[in-house]
Image 1 (tube, rainbow, N blue to C red):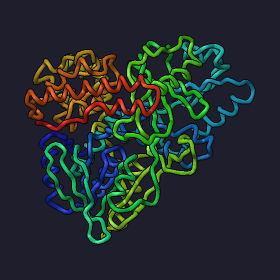
Image 2: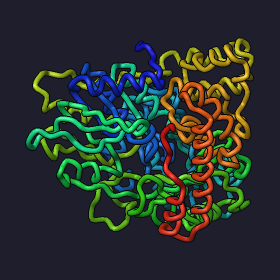
Image 3: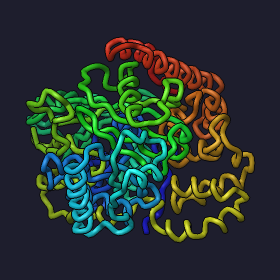
Image 4: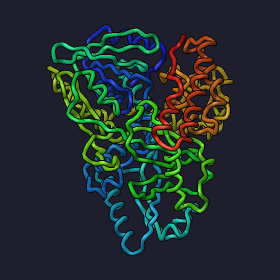
Length: 570
């Protein structure tokens, strides 16, 4: 079992120093799930590795997904059996070995609307889905699908209109807190020796003739530039792939097209159901996913060619989702039921399809110029395979023999011993003085590292109090986010280390001052910086609210860009 490390302010400073003090085997650019996975893959092969990210871990696509770990049931209909089989294998690995504390089973109900032909058609597809999960060798822990009559389906989901279905099929997949999983992957890479630094932007690639031999990175907190030399550079920048490739003077062998996906959060009591839902739309599918005290309703799938850093949800997106889910609900959802909204961009491989829902979810790896490997496309569930393929390509250009990938056997931090500590959760609750439901919530976020958080509470009992208007999260979690999880700004804590920005009615406004105050001491903030952080966050929330009232993408984007970018410490 590897010893956990803290992504503290001090460890970040040390990593930046060491990045400029040696030649690495591999430098990974991009701190989304694929980049973090590539850093972990390379580090566990015994290579010297650096990982840099311009903003926060998972701040782009990897914190704004549907939060599903799934094989992609609809890809069976497209006869993409290889992609489904690969994803189901990864689902099993994540559930059982790699991240059982962060990934958990979730049931879905597929309402049938046509008699005679639809049940055997859907049933055969779900049967194949289950069978492929079993043959992957990693299906243990997920129940098999079952057929339900209309009455049986309505017992599971009383919220459904009786005329919206003639029966149903229920099956199981899995879900994940994507932002925490990505950050934990980066932290695990650091535990295996990778030098990781967020808020560190690549401004140019270093060249020797045609060969890329590293990158110049700028610490966005201080403005300091560091030249990082590496034998191979992996570009894992998702929707920014084309922009990053341009710095190397190449357009690359493929292009990435951004597709916007919007999700809504509504309180759990607005939809009376014990199971998630999967609904067909004219373009794709719509999920209603249980998420703690909420439901996630999503997603859209529309082309996006505006600002990539802050994709904006418009009134049209919200109306589309509400209209489609309301077609099957007894009590329709109203706009005022929407507690949170988030928009993300999928990095799809550019093709001939005019509709982004038809573009490939598969990934490609290329070596456009010597020293630079590019990986793009794919889906969250298969991040580990994408990372493996990228590192395999980089390793081919290294002179010595390098061991093969081992990440299918490497648990993330918090996974080792998780089941044992989960079984002892009542004892842990008595010892810590917290309610067992609180301990269960902490275990699903930190796994076997939960005692690191509880130690903070033991040292300062006031940290055991919940955050204002965000009862699910303790004050200790805001401190831990800085001292152990690499949070640098208020937005990092409210939007990614916790999900307060989408799970609370006020989107974290009430908690902002308390959280900023808790972050101040470990980050060395003065009162001026505390006020700047709060001001930035409040303006971000207001800009997002206003954008969601705009009729289309262009006006929503213009409003969202009205909020200032995060400012470095004064």
